[in-house]
Amino acid sequence: MNDDVAPRAGLPACFRIQARVIGALMIREMGTRFGRDNLGYLWLFFEPMMLGSTIGFLHHLSGHAMPGGLEPFFFWTMGYIPFYLFRGIVNRAPSAIAGNQSLLYHRHISIFDIMTSRHLLESASVGIALLFFLLLFAAVLGTRPQNPGLVLFGMLLTLGLSHGLAMLIAAGGVYTDLFDRVTHLFTYLFMGVSGAFFMVFWLPTEMQEAVLLIPTVHCFEMVRHGLYGTQVPTHYSLPYILAWIAGLNLLGMAALRKARRHLII
Image 1 (tube, rainbow, N blue to C red):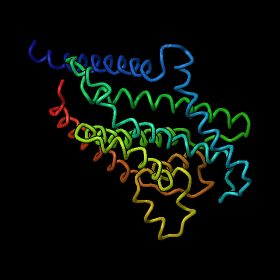
Image 2: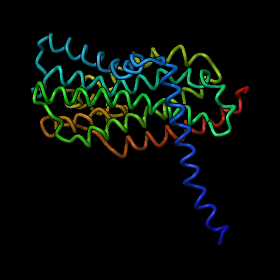
Image 3: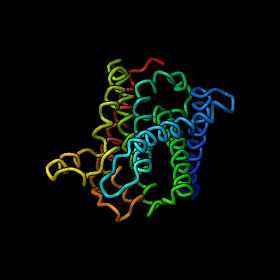
Image 4: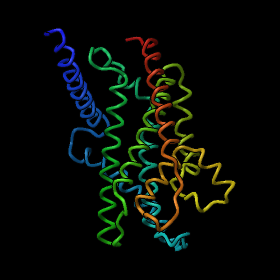
């Protein structure tokens, strides 16, 4: 009977150990990126807030009307926040392993733990910025999301997609510096077609079919469905984006496992 109980007792213990490892790695990453003082930690949340509000404000000043009667400041700001999550995770991926390679001396730390801790930290900072803006718009403009749960789910899908892509990039960075050189350029060029700053219903039918092949477009459309409800039409497929997330994450984990063998610890 003892042999039967031991495996069941061991699994929760393993999860607790890994949770503590990831928590410790997140604290270390905060100190590395933002310093040990309080102002450095606050920058973790202020950076996405300031960038999002600046983009929204500039488009609001332009005075251009938007299809569907959408408020420009709200639309552009809430479009940039999910893209900031995607960009932040993907852009930091090429240096993720090299910058934390010494940690792999520890038996309980894996490359997957390092990547997960970095991405959870990024999502926490962007999540706080998102909450700040939702509360601000509710207080100032009286604009509230029609379905907050759908907004959160769309952000989680963005996190899952970014996490899988970042693992592939990080694994590739073990073999060549090319990923470090082209990733920032990729995210910059990708911004225009990611779905962050347009809605599918704005486009002709032929273009709609083309942009819906891009997985991030589905994430943004889901977020906007949560924000606007039925005020504007949205187009997304949950099975399609889940298939992308599953595929990228499985490939990413396999790539990290292979890359680990090429590291000199």
